[in-house]
Length: 595
Figure (cartoon, helix red, strand yellow):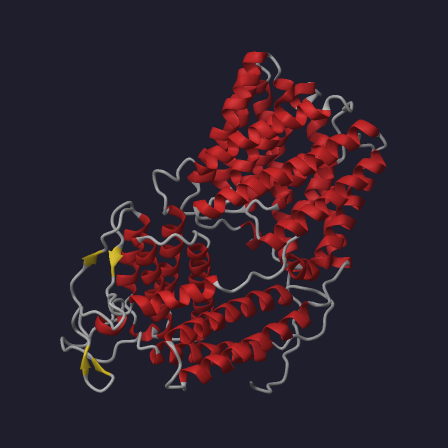
């Protein structure tokens, strides 16, 4: 490890225009948009038929669970969605019970702030998202300020539970049609990211950023494949081989063929058969070819055939699978160890939400949940990102209340018109939020007001004014709390991440130099090092956006990443996954797997 002098942390300028810049929509933006409409429509229309649309807030709480886990394989999605529904019901139960026992606004705000902090920390620790804690906090905070009696609580919870069960079914509905859809998308993203890095392999800052993004995408693809369950399948093995090709391209970016990688990504995203790549040690698929001669390795053995290995399987398949088995054997980190680093985030959330609610009360608000939810939605990985979210939230909410004022006359035509407006806002929010948070907030704001406020038919002008004031109060007070509660342990986490990369690199280098190292040990060491590098970059980026901390060893981070990437490439070569000069493969195969 280099002993380079730590570089002082420079104060970052808080962006305004950059925070509002629109990005490209997600590849699957329509999935959560259609899912939430499918989850909201039946319960809401049933309430219209029964003449009880005043209960829509409770069914909506369960229906919004359909927004979660669209990036998870279906085996994992079933568990995540179940936990989201249970978490939503737990927060709603606390809120409704509190509302039924007291109408003291200070107590209600305090309970709402504590719930927001718990929801934020649990979602961050378990990486549930998007939309993470914001939906859960909105549900519980709004419920706190709805008058209740103890006898009504079980019935309202039953409505939410029934809608949550329907949302679970909606989330799992695509499984019979595309059982490997999430794994396909994650693999395609890894291939595209590897192609993007190959296109910028000349180096420089842009290349370094593309490299980090590519390793992160590959790591995410492996985690998705590992979360898909233990049952083997031909499709799963074919996808794993494609992720290996992405790793090979990262190790030899200058020789990688971006066009071939992108072609594989397009094929994987579709519904056809998975592209078959063959053994990288034999044909070097995904890499540029210099001539048509077969490769010779290991004492001149010809590797241009499809002969079996000693274990009787296709050449290379067993070596690729041993790393998967090794990763499945790694026990996940205990939940407690993931919660401890989030203590500053918990304090920020609780303090910011509570102060925002108290200030809103002092200004005369009778239902300050909007200020509380605004503050809760701000808190990101660091102060810089929190500032960007504050700008996005304020702009989105201010435009959103204008949209609410515009659609209110239509929504007041009748219950069916109100439901149609709610469905349109749900679809618009999920369709737009992927481009930028503020754009989605433009639809989220009228949606929230239509669900929680319109049944009371308060004057539109009064509602708009209250929401504008609460938005500004929540954003300002929430951001001040984030600045006041600094994360002084961010630098320590960077040091620990550097140490982890050091140890993983030394182990991988030692195994790569050991002729007796087993394929399983090499593969496990390589992927452990890749995971450590991804974690180091994420930790360094988060720490660099914090205030009031000691200088970060940014130069050491860069040097550690460079050394780790060299070791990763050496390990891949030691495994024989990189073809030598003169390899050939100009034909295209298809894997005999179902979509």
